[in-house]
Image 1 (cartoon, rainbow, N blue to C red):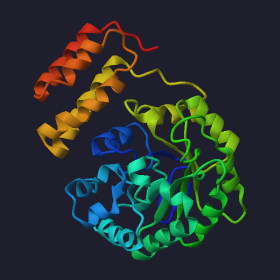
Image 2 (cartoon, helix red, strand yellow):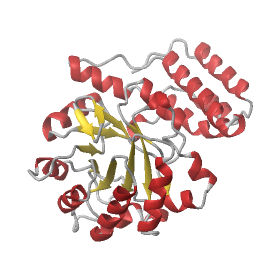
Image 3 (cartoon, helix red, strand yellow):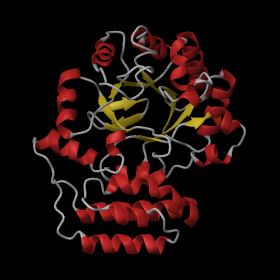
Length: 330
């Protein structure tokens, strides 16, 4: 069993990564139903929370069925981070996570996300400010370093543990790599094997199959793994990995009916959460991924993303079941 503060997780838990414009409540619900053990909100700007920005506040929505769930915040100012952690605490998540890993320019330019990797002292001060401002467990997600010449994750792990974080997730790339090249898990394993480290260490980066998940589990000896991009349009990956761990066998790939059901539920839950108009629009980005690999599907995807009435989208999904009844996943 893995513990984050007072949160008990299964042995070798599978975490759903926080992903901007992806990890909202409807998507998290799908992943939870298909085996994710711990999930996080989309990352939330500390300044946005303090300004009462509507988009930031809406990202605080969490539901009991998805627990345990963490709220992830980012920022470069100690006072703002402490204040935003107190705001987060009011919605009663299971933990607060700090993003020190987002590599996108608009975040880095504000001295937040992976931008903090260039200043470990600031990273420690920001983390301490959050830890001191909340009674919730505080965790961190970060990268190996700013670039290949400044991989500082060993020092970062020790110092963040010293100021009170309860778990650390490490993406096996530097900020300079963005999402290119292969993730290097050797430094993550080095952190885990550091005798000074006693908090759970989770690895992130490039896990896209049950086979790779088992290989990395055995090779690197971490406490669990976080899965991001491989789950987009494919929430089944969590249960597939768990089944493979137990049996050494691969589950059958999701059928057409499974894919249609996932798309239907995603749309339904998005409408319930954000209302019809926003729910319809925000679900559009997911259809390509749900039906990836099905030949001659372009016409149907195009219709799904142009209909404004959910009844019309559901009708297209019914049509898909008839049109592609003979489809066999490969």
